[in-house]
Image 1 (cartoon, rainbow, N blue to C red):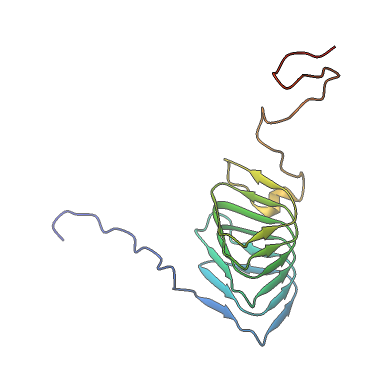
Image 2: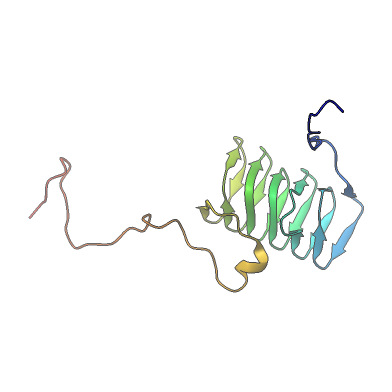
Length: 158
């Protein structure tokens, strides 16, 4: 009105477009955009629309058996599969992940658990592109094994 650009409305953390209730079980892949809140069970992949700013939240009674791929993921329930969070991943105190976690930024509460690898990725990557080639850890983070041994002071031992 006065030459100012309108800012995009920010998504409220409690504003979810879709709710899967605790009395619901979904068999098959779920593709979504916007916000998805899971209190029920999903047996299949949960995939956010490519290029979206989607948010997935799995409550303490929610369960996903399959891989998850979304920019923003909040978990307080159980996941049996890999989790790919390209922007932000929050693991609340009752979160239990049985699979590897690929993240850009992670926040873990005391009590949360991951039974798998934690892999930091700077580049956002979706699950659809990961089906072709599994992501690798950041360059320079590999550890080579050598036959040399060192004593407690850091010097070579013979």
